[in-house]
Length: 261
Image (cartoon, rainbow, N blue to C red):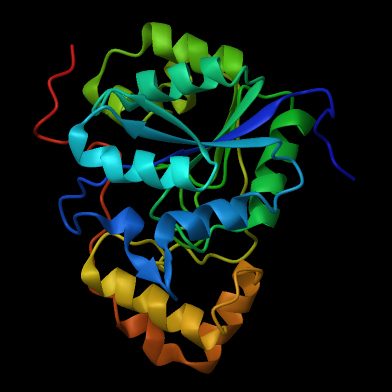
């Protein structure tokens, strides 16, 4: 049974920019002939809880292709700060009149709609300010990297926007909300089996090749579940070797070009 309230406006905001340091332009790289951003959006809108979806990109001219893609495909797009991503999210949520914000990133083309619903449901069931299916240490990730879902009430997001002062809190959007020192109620959605070492996100050419091979083996459909991917990797374990040597970035990593106060 769905735990979320039907009258609540739940908006999914997909974070996207062209300026990746390890794979520039990655969010519009093609997977089975379609941009990666398209994969994220098509899979996210399958979530029952999501009522509206927006892309949040930057005002940088380098991100014009993202804005143009959204305009050409009827996708709502908000453009804001390049490095103060918390402000970008807050302003997008404000424009979208959100009651709840679901944060996704455009480099996760295998994102799963059922996991989105599960995270949103837990937010409401626990009457929490914030819910996620992964948090950084000292918490332990149990879902594969690339299935990350974060959900926050608008009031909690607004509180973070007003009070977050550390650079990583502004650039990574939600860390303020899961710092116990700030008194917010948060809940972690864990998987019963630890799969946290699996890497299904796209940040390097090796990651992109992994995703391309996985989706080709799934006949380029976009309606598969994350469990279908897991079963595929059990049949073809060599696929996981493609990007097994990539080091994942951490919450404390910030863009050296940022100049946040």
